[in-house]
Length: 448
Ligand SMILES: C[S@@+](CC[C@H](N)C(=O)[O-])C[C@H]1O[C@@H](n2cnc3c(N)ncnc32)[C@H](O)[C@@H]1O
Image 1: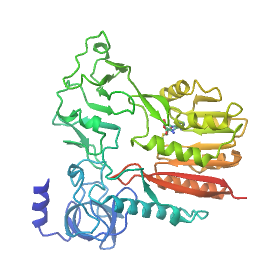
Image 2 (image 1 turned 180 degrees about the vertical axis):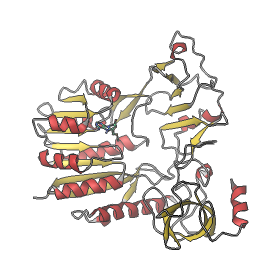
Image 3 (image 1 turned 180 degrees about the horizontal axis):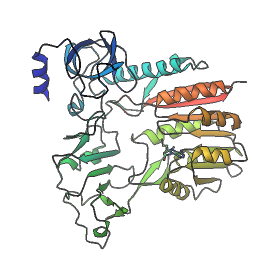
Image 4 (image 1 turned 120 degrees about the vertical axis):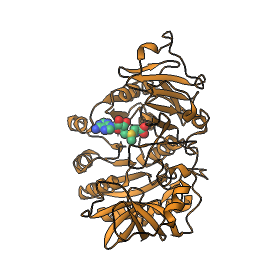
């Protein structure tokens, strides 16, 4: 890759577009981890640059990069004038022409957080959020995170056309070989997954480093026979995977080879059962950081009725159950059948908490009683103004909104303001270091 960059750098940048080289002065961060530049009046979103730099960038071979397109996308090939915020990449394989998932690995950690803060504040301003002083929204590191490495407790590798296990490229389905992923938890790195000799039918591998017990690995493939797996089924455990809980995900579902296809996570002294391929906050510290902030922000009292919407396996519900006590009620709602069933199991010892598997919007519509407080933690698409407005109409005291996508958060906060609520507080956390992603927690209360 470095050789390619040198070769490209020696070429004279061409003046015209499409699949060619442009010399660009790079400006502000844009949503999606790119940076804004202009070429003859047209916006170009550049990956792999740093604001303030002058770079030679290659327009991506992207159908959208047509001569008529309003904007183009490009990747940095050579840096003519580097920014002081540029550092040697913590993961060179995630650079130009490399894997996705660490698009800011070439930027110092402090600068990454400053840039993420800029994006967050800009999105809030553009959405017209007016009840929060936007400069108060600052991206904070996870506690004690000094290098942003080793945080990923969930990793997926995919088999490429060359038969090797690798990772997908940035905004592409192409699989690139990987050596070591420095963002992955050490327990996953030590498995040396890319070098293992796995059955040909394996199309992808999920690796999990839970907080309790040994790592789990799931081999995924449409041609993988579940019949051969199972304690007595004689599935041959690939060399190198003897020390993990192994499962096989074939066309008929997941079958455990060793272990039970589940992992155990411990958060603030409480244990949760999670499916090995099911949703769990990915950063090692995220469950504890977010639970602590949600608990504090909800200000739940004895006897309250609390809804935990998009509740997963019951992470926030379990902690909130303690706050509302035996006279209160916590209802956790999750759309995924497997996660909903696990939430029931995880909350079983807490009589004041219960879990339901349902679509959140349909469930909220069907409720006869209003809640005192609501915590919501939707996927990237957010709530949408309709559900946000409905929750604002029904919630008596507080809504705490946990978000992994600041653009939809900003849109939904604006909808809440229009429904007569105000944003009392917003904290943002760098729970995806070396990427542009951030996790935010906003507190909404009634404006009057
Ligand atoms: C970001 S995760 C949060 C899970 C949980 N709060 C946690 O921290 O572990 C979002 C969850 O919402 C669920 N989900 C997505 N769309 C949904 C819908 N329309 N109704 C109910 N749940 C949904 C997903 O299955 C996922 O478990």
